[in-house]
Amino acid sequence: MPFARASGVLLHPTSLPSRFGIGDLGAAAYAFIDFLHQSQQQLWQVLPLGPTGYGNSPYMCYSAMAGNPLLISPELLAASGLLTAADWQDLPSFSSTSVDFASVGPSKFALLRKACDAFRHQASIDDQHAFRQFCQTKRDWLEDYALFMALKTAHNGASWQTWELEIVQRQPTALEQWRRQLGPEIFLHQYLQFEFFRQWSALKAYANQQGIQIIGDIPIYVAHDSADVWAHPQNFCLDEQGEPAWMAGVPPDYFSDTGQLWGNPVYNWEYLQQSHFQWWIQRFRSMLEYVDIIRIDHFRGFEAFWAIPQGEETAIQGEWVEAPGTELFEVLKQELGTLPILAEDLGIITPEVEALRDRFEFPGMKILQFAFGSGPGNPYLPFNYQRNCVVYTGTHDNDTTVGWFSQLSPYEQTSLQRYLGSISSDGVQWDLIRLALSSIANQAIIPLQDLLGLGTEARMNFPGKAEGNWGWRYQPDALTQALREQLQDLTERFGRAPQPNSQSE
Image 1 (cartoon, one colour):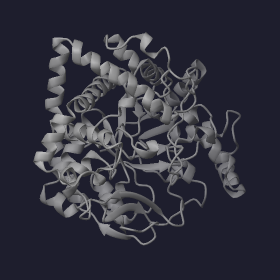
Image 2 (spheres, rainbow, N blue to C red):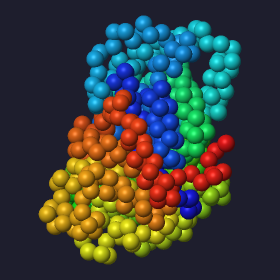
Image 3 (cartoon, one colour):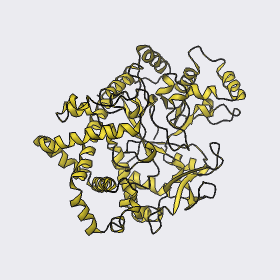
Image 4 (cartoon, helix red, strand yellow):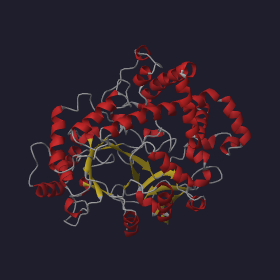
């Protein structure tokens, strides 16, 4: 669906300032929303919000439905009487510029377990009722997720396909025995989801009141070591041992001579069709409960996906397999209505992928950092845009604009300078921000790193690099009045400020 002209900022909540070593849903998140509102932004784009596994990637989560407990604010828990400031007096000294996931995880979970114990023993009647109601409402995924996470703890974090055969195969008697044995741990994970969604829902409500819509991100694939694959193996192409028979990835391209081997199991689309796409309906319905707009990562996989046989160490030997994307989105439209979707249509895009995107009027993505390596026919140059698209200076997978420009070839630097006329004294990042905001694209999204003029040290992700990503955080004093005014001026000048009566009441 086409969207009204607007702009916003890309920032994952882990990048917010916080004394706990990782951004959370507390005061800094509300201050960031205030910054967006005051600078006339209408969109806040986040990465997937699920509980992350190995590598801490938000695109490889233990659940497609659950929220990340590390985003829960201990200070909000203290405001509810479940913790006190004394509980975090002995915290380690965390970096203010990056997340050390190895130390943050144990430290944060110690506080969350303490809050859970307090909730179990002293929650009010109203909170107990709200918790039971939450568990009932989310039952379709929460019961499997909480048991899955409890089982992972009991098995020292081992992947589910290595557990005892009877629970790998989900034999009812074995599952019931483990539920009784792991009752307190199951309760913990149910409670953490309750708190995550309580805090997130309050934050989203505040954003909407300030005229800010939240763009969430839905990865097309789920992690193999996840509650989704363990609980619903029939939805995926697995072998008899539960390993991926066919793995997801992309073929060799500009980024890699060997392609990208992601390792996720690809979908058993034949079974999903037979089940009337119930799992996908549940996934989108769940997503729409806590975001306003959904960005679909790797949208092209709904038209055809790159399937790599088990045992391959690179993505070279894969093959394209058609997917029933048209049928899926027709069913979703029938069940959920017209969906507010943005399509990540980067990479190897065919006319068939474009036809699928355009059939449902999903805006595609334009990346300015891709615009200056060829001639005037480059689709990422602003004069080649159609209105129904969203333009970015760069994404979480790109270098920051300052870092990108410093590493451009002389040809590309000259091409950019000729296009701009000259590089402004404000820095190349503001030139690209101006290009994005002044373009005809209905929506423009700027990573906060570009607004702050940061270099490669602030990059969020290096595709293909398994570790060391996702850690960047901004300083508490970064959102200055001067920055707000500069962004507000450009936003108003190029017609992206909220129009009268367009904001939420």
